[in-house]
Image (cartoon, rainbow, N blue to C red; front, side, top):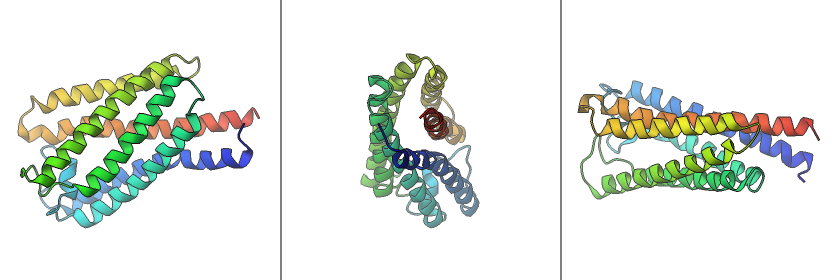
Amino acid sequence: MMNSKKIQIFKIISLFGIIGVAFYFLHVIVGGILYEGYNPFAQAVSDLTASNSPSRKIASTLAFIYGIFEIVFKIGFFMYFKGKINKAVSVGSCLFLIMGLVSSFGYTLFPLSEAGYAGTFQDIMHVAVTVCVVVFTVISLIFFSIGFLKTKNCKYIGVISICTLALLLIGALLLNVVPKAYFGAAERINVYSVVIYTGVLSLWMYRYIKKIGTHN
């Protein structure tokens, strides 16, 4: 049983997720403004932080801040819900944390060498990080879907998890069929769905802890 101080700490940490989401979209908006000629419909989000990008300095800084908030939130989410709801949710939260760590450290260490894909070692590693992030995201969403759908009061989170997973699959399919002029739009279906999902988990965790606190 947690004491009130620990509960308050977790309640604060739960909001780190939504704060991180705000910084993520800030890095997209500010980066797009500073990157003259940037086309969000055709270009990937990663182009904003590419090594030769005119928006790299500020966009990377905002993305780094986003990463810090997201990692702290995902650590807190895992620690708080470990063994709390059911095994599937615990496994899902662990995989979601691993995804966050791989994403944050991987993209920081291996940004694109230039906009698009130049085929350098750095670019290959960037793609490898992306593959790992996608795999961990998909598997974590499957566990979240199963775990939350088993509950009485949190089934809607399971439905949201399934919808997010569906958007990931749709985005992946579109990436292989859309013309290059719409690559960025298709990619954003994948990226934004996961970022927004994180924000949903953040607000849900805050409400969950608040509700539990009122019953203590």
